[in-house]
Each structure stands twice: as C-alpha cells, then as structure tokens.
Length: 70
Image 1 (cartoon, rainbow, N blue to C red):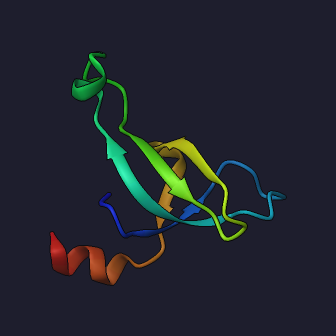
Image 2 (image 1 turned 90 degrees about the horizontal axis):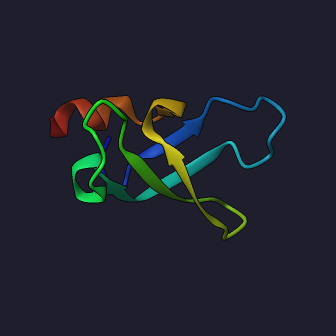
C-alpha cells in the first residue's frame, strides 16, 4: 500500500466513509514497534476527516494501478 492509493475500509459495512485516500503510511519500524504489526495508514475520507487505520483493515480499490507501480 502506498500514498495515493484509493482504498476501501473493510471492517465496518455500515460506515458511510468506506472509501478513502492514503495520505501517509507509517511503518512499524518508524514508530519503534515490532515489525510483526501492519503499517498504519493515515486516511483522507470524502467528508474531509483524517483518520488512522491499520493497513490490514484496508483493501486497495485501484489494484491495476498498484500492480503497475510495484
């Protein structure tokens, strides 16, 4: 997962802010935590809110673009 990816938050089906844009990816190493945890993503949602979500709770919507960049 990279900055700029459009993602789907897959943990709450009823949440109206399901889709968001990754604006920062914070690795566990940078936070000083063990690497067994997934990265933390700072998300920008359509209503303008910015929240943090674990990368394993997100699914990339624009997978074709992500595969080309990889």
